Image (cartoon, rainbow, N blue to C red; front, top):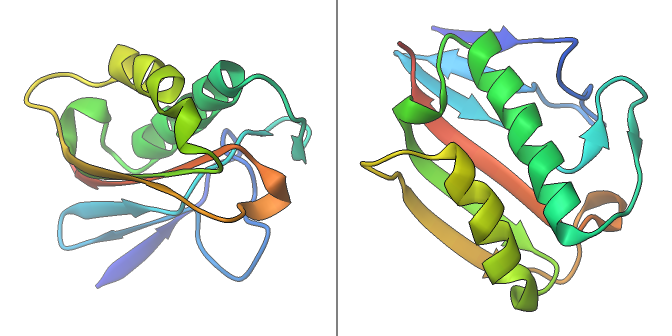
Length: 126
């Protein structure tokens, strides 16, 4: 059985998908970009600021799902430019704890709203 997660602390979906799904004790988040949940707007900014907002949105989404960063088992990071890897990694590392989740980071041609970074996670429900 699966259950959709809906939180006002996280940006509303911009398409036909759920913010997250909980199924069989696991949380599957949709990718998050730097959208301010209070306004629903994406405002381009420095990559560090975008990554911080993405991580804060993911933190709120994991919390609403009954999880947190310590239970994340897999992360996917999508970058508009791989030259932003070090900056995004520095922000990401402030939130994650050992043992660190498995992860891939890939450069993509374009992200929704021309964002610089998008991150999704798979986590265990606590």
